[in-house]
Amino acid sequence: MKVIKVLALILLGFVLFLSLSVLGTAFTLNSTVINPDFYAREMDRVDITSLAEEPISDFTAEAGLSVEFRAALLDAVSQIEPLAKEQVAAAIRPVLDYLGRRSQSLDLASVLGDTVLDPEFIVSLTERVDVPALAGELLAEEIAQEVPLSKSELVAYAKEVMAEIEPWLRQQIAVIARPLIDYMLGKSPSLNVVISLQPLTDGLRTVFLRSPPSELSGLTQPQLQQYFDDNVRGLMPATFEVNEDLVGPDVPSARARALAEAESGLAEARVYVGYFKLGYWLLIVFVLLLVAGFALISWQVRRATRGLGIIFLVAGIVFIAGNLVARYFIGGFLGQQPDVPAGLHLLQLVGDSLAPLAVYGIVLAAIGVGLLVASFIFKPRQAG
Image 1 (cartoon, rainbow, N blue to C red):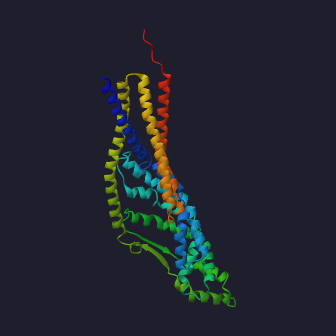
Image 2 (image 1 turned 180 degrees about the vertical axis):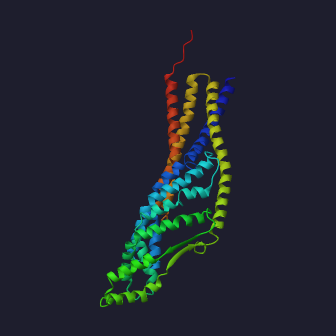
Image 3 (image 1 turned 135 degrees about the horizontal axis):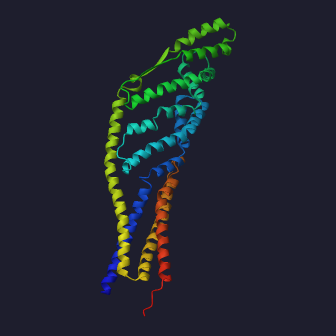
């Protein structure tokens, strides 16, 4: 009978050790992959400005744009980065809530419209950007081939003009943002926004007449006016129209297909995540039943606490050691990859992803030590 009891305890202990191992993996996944707070924390660590520096440098060099424009563009990215991270995290949360069955439905178009594609959010981004510095040089690029002025003079004029009409320019961005996004998200069947460019032309004329280029310094105001009308005004269209042809007539249908496919994929993933969550909680219950079964078969408190203490302590040590080994090898591998951008902070991501595993191991080891200490402190009653 004693042999059967010992074999049963060994079997239960082995199954308990395996169950604790599986539970540790499930705990890590539950704390990272399907946890919206994990994504928010990790996204906050990513240095988007640093990641954007090389692509922006390549773009400005290929387009022939100035170093000042590159600096202004990087500054724009830096200014909007915190807000963009907040909105992306806000968009991820309802998706994970849906996968985790904390919500019953998911409308990706609404999620996007309420977060990263919210018109008010888009407008707020432009308020953090040096619009004159960016739009001024782009305007100069557009008219550089037609106006017989030096590139530096054109850029200076364009920037001055943009500073002059900046409030109007920001207002037009707000006017365009909502109908454009509604069209892209399928909330509106058509798109037709017409913006008068007269304020832009007037602003350019004002700056030109106020401080003409050195080549034209000898001209009178009427002559400068005539020069402007002949060489610049004709280049400026009367209006700017944002319509389906400009955006792309197939954008709404392509968007609808992409969102439908994404929602279908998420619905399928939701089923598997549901199985995972159910299995996770059933595994916790199973571990508790194994602990109770081990204690009942052992019968004696000292033997039960000592046996369980050893199992928990060994499992905890295995997880702590496994976490350290994984960090070492993954860190070494990433350190040998020269193409990994520093702004991604992959080593930190690996550490954060494995952190729940380490916490789990420490908790198991602490429980094991506590049970072992209890087994030595507890003194059974003496008979009679």
